[in-house]
Image 1 (cartoon, rainbow, N blue to C red):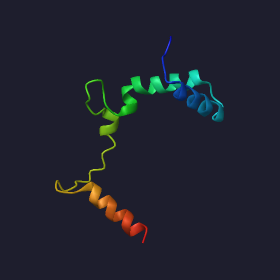
Image 2: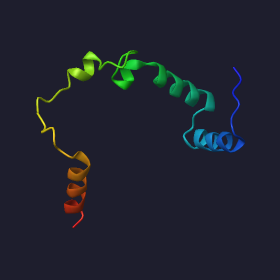
Image 3: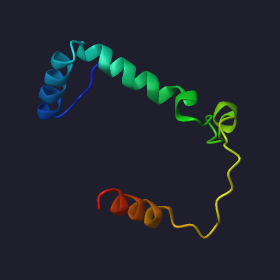
Image 4: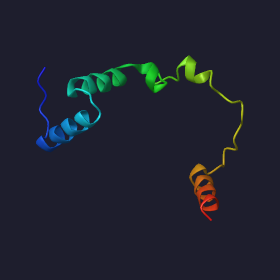
Length: 81
């Protein structure tokens, strides 16, 4: 297989691989493997939620009007007071 990549990307990837004591080939293989395994993404090839992910439901119902970003921002602001 031949890949055409930016030289800087290649150099950074080589440094990353060396610092993690892995080959660049094994990193690329792991990445491609994770992309192609739908169960790792929690959805099947049609974008449906996998049974495993569905089984993780907590049963908690959130209000439809809930603004998650605002709530999280409020949480962080309170946390860092």
